[in-house]
Length: 213
Image (tube, rainbow, N blue to C red):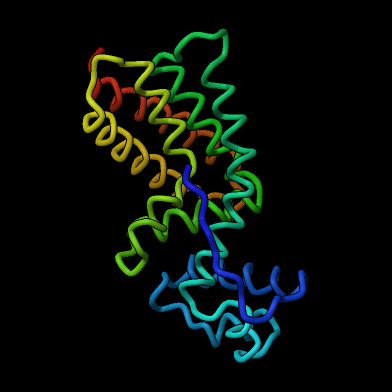
């Protein structure tokens, strides 16, 4: 996963103001997408002036970079755990094990407030044509880990085949997570776990069809 380099802001924000701005920006980008999100509204929701927000980050693009970079700090810890889970017993995970581990990992993440916020932001921005391709590529920190596991699980396949299979599987996962948002709001956590079980079976079957061993 490549690191993101954010230019130094014109004025260094205090930790509290920076945190409020990043949280407000993440909520705005998740709700409205990049283009429709208003820097003025982000500043207002963070309790700071537009002038101060502009001094801190310079532009909405740089603010998005900072939001993604903050999530990447969490990603580094998450991906270490996922990588370890996919390497248990020092052997390649099968497609069935890969699907179960990956989906369980993402649904466990979704069960936390921070994790859910991150995944909903990811789902919103991955298909946002107004976000630079490099930023979209950097959003999903699980991709390189899962892609590497796919290469070990089905070594006879090509990189384009694995990439296509990953995109299809991730689409199914994201659809299930979006459906789970409604269940979470209604307090139906059993429905969320059922969705996890269903999408695991769906992804396992899809990977098997797209990547025959």
